[in-house]
Image (cartoon, rainbow, N blue to C red; front, side, top):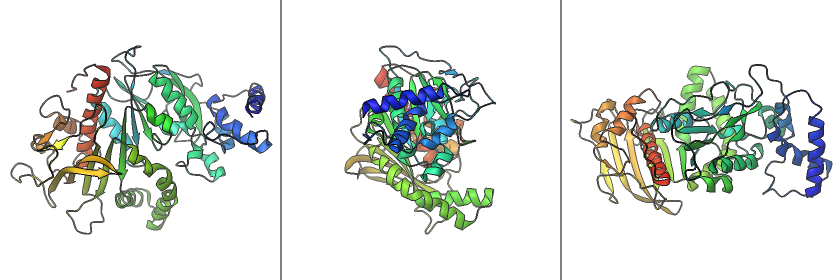
Length: 431
């Protein structure tokens, strides 16, 4: 069995050595099991060790020529900030969500707490998905697709399917970063749908992996110091997609519905179950303030915070552990119809104790958020008004007038506090 793998690997590598175009060598791990199984050189394959068995089509992307940038891997490291040492290793954060659920906006809010403007690696692939700022590196897990867009079509699988991912490489490289080592990370090109040559990524103080499957592989999940899930309800997803695709792209209602339904089985099977593994969940639901609302413009957002997580203490409203429903004073917080309502209280989530902080409605004047902030406790802010300041700074981001922006900002502050607790290093507040 093992001898067959290495014999086949040697043969493939010798063949690749005769070619005259760039190769993404990380994809060989996906190619070998598929070829071997079809040549019947390997009677059975241990799926715990070899996660991908239908990746032959990925080879076309590995062999595609590139003319717009150098194929020599570029080194990408945070622009400035704290050094990684033997004593101080990167703190790893995972964010899971379906496509089109606001992961990019969430990342911008979180990284802004640590300073700097997240940008792609300078001098590298212009289609890189990696974002670097002063202390953070954000890696998109689409880069660990084992099958490119055409390979998935040939294999009859979606981008959500486990067989379209290279979990082995994802684990090995995440582990290397955790150990303070640089990696040669592949790039999934969202423009061409192909897998581009790798880029070198150096470890940073805060290393964030975001995408469809950050908690799917137990080995990767166990490397993470904090896990976040962004949970958008089907009703809100549908409303958002109608607004975007009908208004901006001219799609019919029927085609939008068909697109959602085509993804739903894989989402339900592989993505949605990850939320029960998260330390915090941002759940976005239709408002309860407007009966039978179908527009999805006013949202009810719940911050579900797991109890007993290391280096994390849930935020609360007024009195910790109490159950509170609060409609803010209309003289201190301007809000047009249908108004704003907050809720806080203990609950259970997949059998575990959680604290839930909820906001239904939206702000009319964001600067008045300071009134709400004054009633929130244990937010991990460094000074009075820091949440409001962050929200005003990022007021152009989607969700800045409702609970999505508010709770994402609080999570950013919690990640900063968690980083300080783990590394015993203070991060200055960013004005």
